[in-house]
Length: 400
Ligand SMILES: [Zn+2]
Image (cartoon, rainbow, N blue to C red; front, side, top):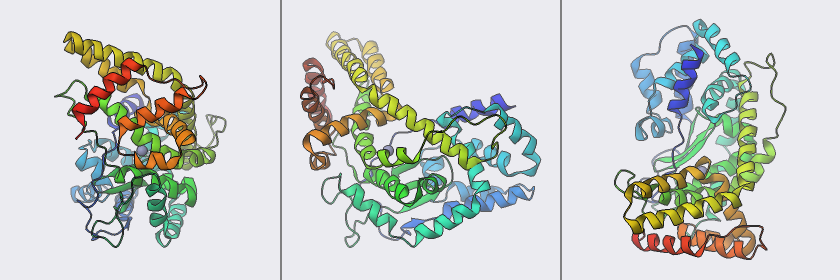
């Protein structure tokens, strides 16, 4: 049963791109600014399962449509089968044996796809810790501090102001996948992740998501089915979006995600929180490795860009589509590590104010990176003139 179960997890928890928030369009100040109702619904369902009962359809629907969860299960239309199975596995007494078998089969496996399983285990084992942390942050001005941090790397007024009619989005807490999102309906944050990061880490983690919420890219990324260049345009938009947002939180979060030795087969099988910490440590390692490989990634993306330009010249649509797709695949984790490297280089050379005023413009981001890379004394690799000429053509075509 376990391998099939894991395969289902792998299919369900795919990486989704960030969505740009249009300030002022959705938020009218009616929603609570720090909303934990998703977490309440989660524990309501969990307590039914713990009693050995089955939650009714209405209870599941209330959970899946709660603030935060609705982003994943309604807006992104994710299949809810997996979270339902996972909650049964973790909380139902009758599933205890299956849970132990599953845990034994994923020993030493720190792929991001296993985050939901361990997040739920942490929620089960650390309910009091989470309750305390929630109390602590509910009465603090964490959200305002996070908005301030995010605003420092955005154009002026990007996140509006509390006194204006366009106020910044609320924060919706969930228990799901050790992750966060900056979405049109609000900032979504996993409470287990926030607790592990501590108060300061949670503030920076929220700020990262607020940065996504406040950024309005001038690049109109077309639909993948209608435009062969959609993949590569998405890649360049992601490099800037995640790269600048990572400047806000990654160095602090990584300092918290200290890498430990892999757990032994018998140690802490049920300790979800410890597993989450290890998953995050593995994530930090992958990020740092890909960050350091940015020069070779840039070389690869550069040659693919030139290939796309050639394919376009030859009218070879199949090749154009393949190479465009390869560009998106060449940047790991949705652009985080390589974008982070580029943003760091730009910040060191031109200052964070330059990053802030240009934060909506992925083409400026590449040009700034190129200037900084050229002056790096060979440590960083700039894009070629040919690739930059092609990007300038795309800029004309896909920006207003
Ligand atoms: Zn992000």
